Length: 238
Image (cartoon, rainbow, N blue to C red; front, side):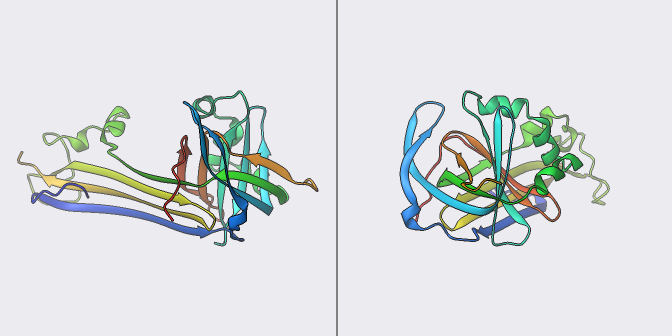
């Protein structure tokens, strides 16, 4: 929590943490500088090459998706990239049915889960994301407004104080590191309430050399744990 106020009466904290290693660590010899094409200019950055025999692959006319298993049972990392000449933002704004079904855990995406394992040659950059946002404006634009208003918020269901409570801090923090070992990801959301007063032999090659999306998924429950967008990879500190 970045802001402290002595009038805080209730603090809710939600934390998600994932430390998933590749089933086979990427050798240092498989890390070489290559070009990542950001929206503004080419960037020379360390790329990893991972050969995965137990991957899953799905593609459409304008996109391709690959799932890589980790050492954690029923946990995988999925990368989604637009194909050449198809901007990633278009893919986000108009996601294909297969991707929507995947995110919504629809039966249609059982096709992907039941696909036979394939050999994947994956080239992807090392990257780190460290971000903090205030989602209040986002929620207000979605119609959630009263909870943040000192004059009209109603949390009488969780307090007997006639003056009541209102939300005055809402923070979301996330850190993700992807390197030769695997992925480490942590996200926390804090809410502070204040009193009113005021299958190919040679395999499939996927090169993530331009902006892409990634997902960390619990494959057993088919729950998306983390979602991220990489547009300019920052190399993790060793």
